[in-house]
Image (cartoon, rainbow over all chains, first blue to last red; front, top):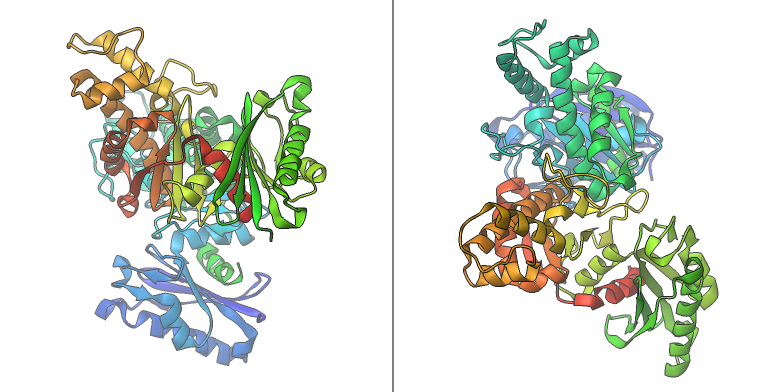
Length: 311
Length: 311
């Protein structure tokens, strides 16, 4: 095994790249553009060139590199095959094989949300735990479910799709996935806005939140300021998320939940609302799970991709 | 590795025992009494004696035995330690170590529902699948969630407690676990009776089901006979169970669900009602999971216990 490892996080507009030592020390970090034209055919060649250039720049030999880990925005099976990545323009791609042949190094690919979870376990809020769930509250609700240090990718790469646990009957609006009443419809940044606008449309209680233009950040800022309506929205959010995380716990019985994504910038107050309802819904054997905030922010993906090679 | 393996399923009244070859052929099967007096202190010695006697009877040497697998009714961690088994009278017991020293063979213990799941994967309805969920619909709802051929036992042995996924808000009755609205309250044999009695108390539609004395078997018999009220109860059952299984699929993305336990004796009609609602609630990436009936019945536990040694 080499001394170095590359961790790569492929997004729809930029590709984040990190050079690490095998202990997880980040030695260098940079970005390249994601060129999605022509069905994204340049993406893997671009990554290969960027890795090779960095090795030349640093005087690193192939024998010194344990491998290249890569997270992509779509389902990836255990062999590194994606059936399609809409955001990248890709159809079916065998990432491990294709990129591996280009770069001449072992390559291991995973789903970006799952990979970010691995990063938080390795060097972030989940350090010290090997049975954990990382929940990413951003535009959507993503996550990674880790058992004994390994991500559950599932039979066809659709493991850890925790944003699509059904938590509400009778929802009229449709989730991005086509279903109704998914966790993501209430616990993502856009979900919090949905809860807030519904609340504001149905209450006459005075609040600083402005109907029509409220953001998730506004809600949490006003929760901290003691706004009663903001607090009632946070209770609803906590109820939905607590219910969803309790369902995960009934399946995997984790030691810890790590909460990340843009919404988690609200800080510890978020955890108070989640744990209140989690404890109400969860099976007693999982009641003592620890709740932590994620700490790696946008770097979780490159850390986790590097770890993918070392698992 | 030896040629033989013992699989033992410890229940509150009897201990089922099986002698298998390592290919999974059941060579002999018998039962002994579960002596639970004095905090169940005789249970492991009794098992040890039964195994030793069988080896003498069959002329089997220790070197010929791969080990002894054992399922017990309570949470068991990966080291074979239980913190307590109410039905056996046990407090904390290190089964692997204690029974291992008595019998002089490698011992591996697991939770009985999880172990039965492993049995169905190995030689029952789940043959050919390595990512599957075995659901046991009996007095309660138990199960085993298997990923890559291994049971998820969880951080503290409470993995696969799928009967306690929350599927109904506002339930007034309390589940055995202390929560309200658990899957087990609607999809177990007693849960089906609950649904039936509620339906019968609120309808004037003619039905052959008798309020006050209906059983789960009555409901399924009448479903097959075309009774409209029985069918509406089956729809409710399917809705709850489909919702719960979809939540599991969002976490682990299995290839297959195997439905067992007393309720599964109703046969394929059961699967029709479950899959209808499963497909409605599940994330699209898991929509094509296969649904099968369990086939090993009460022997699933001894098969799975044997397999525990061979994993």
